Amino acid sequence: MDDLDNRARQALDNIDRLSPQVDRLKDRLVMVEDYLSGNLAYALKKSSKSTGDALQSAEDLKQLLSTLVSTILERNEQLSSAHELSVRKATGKTNEDIAALAEIVSMTAASTSALQRQIVSLSFLLCLLSISNLFCLGALERACSITSPATRFHGARIR
Image 1 (spheres, one colour):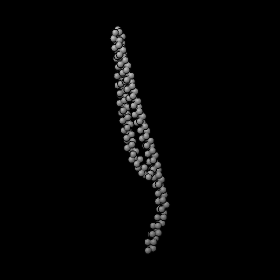
Image 2: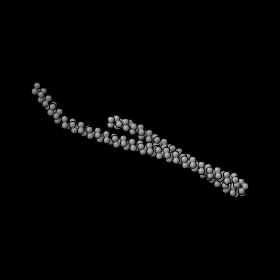
Image 3: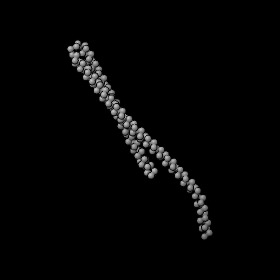
Image 4: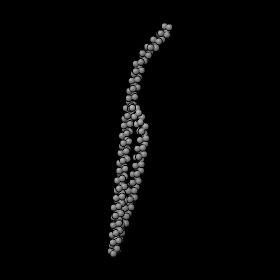
C-alpha cells in the first residue's frame, strides 16, 4: 500500500511540474492562432483590394473600348462624308478639263485608301483591346474563384 501511495504522490508531483509547461504551450498556441488569423485577414483584405482593382481595370477598359468604337464610327463617317463630297465635286465638274477631273479622282482614291487603311488599323486595334478585355475578365474570374472560399471561411470564423 505504501508503494502505491508513493507512486500516486510521484504521479501528482509529475503532474504539478507538467502543469506550468502545459500552460505555456497553451499560451504559445493561442499566440500562433492569433498570428495566423491576423495574416489571413490581411491576405483577404489584400485579395479584396486586388479584385476591386481588377474590376476597376475592366470597367476602364470597357469605357476605353466604347470610346474607341465611337471614335472609329465618327471618323468613318467623317471620311465617308469627305469621300462623298469629293465624288460630288468630281461629278459636278464633268464639264471642266481632263486635268482637273484627274486631280479630283486622285484625291478621291487617296482619301479612300486612307480611309481603308485607317479602318483596317482601327479594327485591328479594336480586336486587340477585345482580347485584352477577355484576359482581364478571365483574371477577374480566377481571382474571384480563389478569394470566395477564403472569404466565406474567414467570415465563418469571425462569427
